[in-house]
Image (cartoon, rainbow, N blue to C red; front, side, top):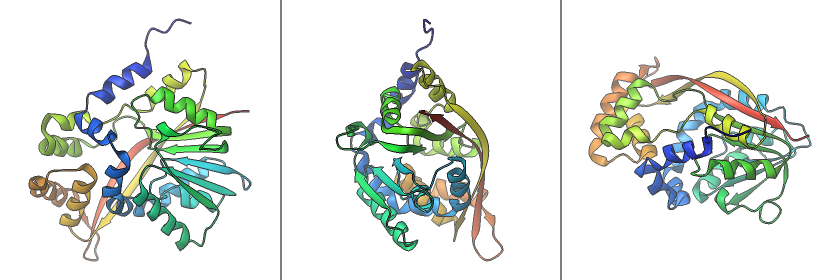
Length: 276
């Protein structure tokens, strides 16, 4: 059937619109090395939603799982508590160090780490085929079609992808990004899961989709701590820290014990397909 819309080319156009994103792509490992500590703090409060997502994958005790873009182990650690072995692949050495510490804290040894960009992976050569491949919020590639083809080739039984459904940023966060970055702040988001589904469909991969609501609650000692974490993760200029702190002072809720909570609700999607 003739394609009227080339979804992968549309994705590329959105991707290329962001100068900030193209700068990060020059050396993603180094970029994430600088953010590893802040990222770990940001996801430490997501144990409940991570456990929910691992449960959605239907992993088997004998599974060998490849976590592409594993980060600090938000999913890799709970997956290792279920599966036979988890291979964590990430371009950042510091992120993988945090992941290894998380595994050690749980007494887990059934894992291995590969420090590599997914673009440099060659299935059957430097990355083995696994029963299941997981990619959670790690699909920020210029050529998403090529990345998805490689993910599919790396899985012998199933693939599980996680991505946002609809706009993942709140209106307040969009306004903050525009205040901090100006016009460039408008071009940093990615299209939602509908693009991924259509890119897969064009490759005759027909996936199931589960859309669900995630309630995320982060805890902070102060608005300033929240602002510093956000500024680090988003590479905000130092002179904007006051603006970021004002945003969080308005958004955070007291937790009744001297700290603060930041609550967010997001629609997310699991995209899953079976190989056989």
